[in-house]
Amino acid sequence: MADAIFATGRRKHAVARVRILPGTGKIAINGKDLSSYFMNPSLEQEVTAPFRVTETEGKFDLYVNVLGGGLSGQAGACRHGVARALTEVDENFRTVLKKAGYLTRDPRMKERKKYGLKKARKASQFSKR
Image (cartoon, rainbow, N blue to C red; front, side, top):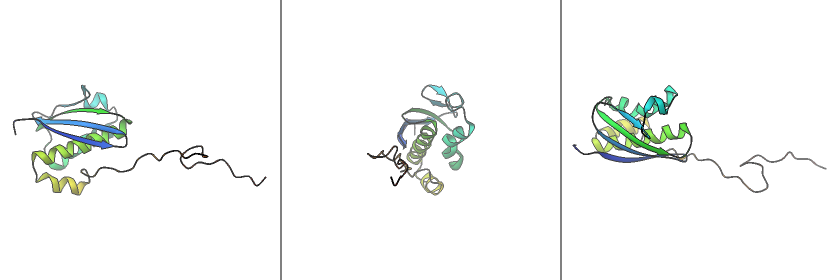
């Protein structure tokens, strides 16, 4: 495995294009360091979770371009992309990542607004007269 491996991860409206190569554990998201892009430590842990599960922390360099959605959705998209890329590195990682739920695309999306309502489900208060 001398070449880079590409994968795509999605969550809500966020799309992450992940490139993984053997290295020292450097993680760059949109050209920034992981901790400077995701200020929240829980979001940082979400991105690096597939590495911890497969026990490959510090063995790969990770370069991610992510767009759309909010920070939480972007972190979930990065996690999904990293997990998909790791399965291409070694097929044995698939069972571990699948058991942890990192290979499943989260299908939950924002519900559309319906006509006659204020939001997707919020209606004006009912009045008899």
